[in-house]
Image (cartoon, rainbow, N blue to C red; front, side, top):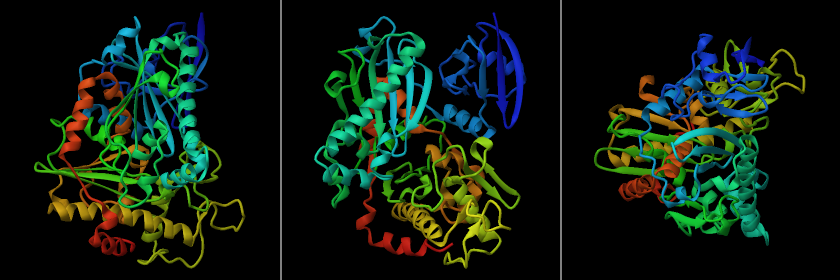
Length: 498
């Protein structure tokens, strides 16, 4: 039996007729389409992912065509990020622990609980291969765009903490259920779940009130590794299966950063570098041969699209790139708003054409989509939007500067600056430097390394030894609480300027 396969790449579509069972990666490569497959198509790296419409993201080297499908191929930037992520990820032996003995062909689920989105990695624990990846909006978003809003929801509502927990568990169970239906495997074949996330998200998942994180001295209820039976928390896998939470450093340097940093192969990275995950919370670390300094800044949700008049997450309709030559919209549809990467580009362009002064003042709204009209449907940037961006970029820049000053390291001494997380992956680095968000160093020192939190969650799922490595990393970290650092206040004021 033969099927039709349409390949979509950067606006171009090609159609192919293939026989049933055709390997998708092989089909893509046979048609001279470049795609990241650094493990050679053996299913061990999970970097050859493509989007199959109606099926979600799949690992193409493990996908056999069994119906008519439309395949959306990754863009060049995405492929470059996936490749660098794979190249810099350490190799671990597959040793998931005793839970792997619960099923003849055991599966595990690695979960990165982000403030805005959740990423799920389904892993064959016998071979250590990532067989599928799924993403979704964090369902807690309806309780607020940032962690403080959700902490307050938990504290102010009788069933608040319980609701925050149950909605995460339901999302995990839904993902497992969907994969079982798609693949034909049983719930009992899932024997282990690995969780990473910021400290608040981990408290939410455990049903623990995170209120202490919101108030000085910002002390979380727990930061250590947690291991619990899945049935005790309502995760529907094998009844004797376990859920493992990676450790955090502090209330605002969570397991997502720890797992991400620990996932890097120290033999392949510089000796002095910055690791930055820019999101609602700007979490970052400065690594030198002598010490590791970590801090977090309350960047706010501006870079996630919240608190911006026409801001939105990086979904269809969002302006994601902007220059004097025009803009690019996710999904190639009519623009309906602006996501974080688009915001950075727009502000940088406004500086370049002198529509935006050093203090961030504008005389009128900047109309993006059709500046020759005043139609209400136009996407634009307001003065208040500019202020939100100033606050967010100043928080990140000031955190970086304080770490550098405390460690007595100059930015010119850095070997690399690693940008992790969804926002860090897709921003235009030149634009980020132009507005003062990132240090002004040579572009080749910047490396966008993908969702290292997700990679760390996968390694923690596969290897009990990796859990120990995360704990060792935490012991080497010195955490700086910027809210009590007098110099940070001055830095913040100075970095408000463009």
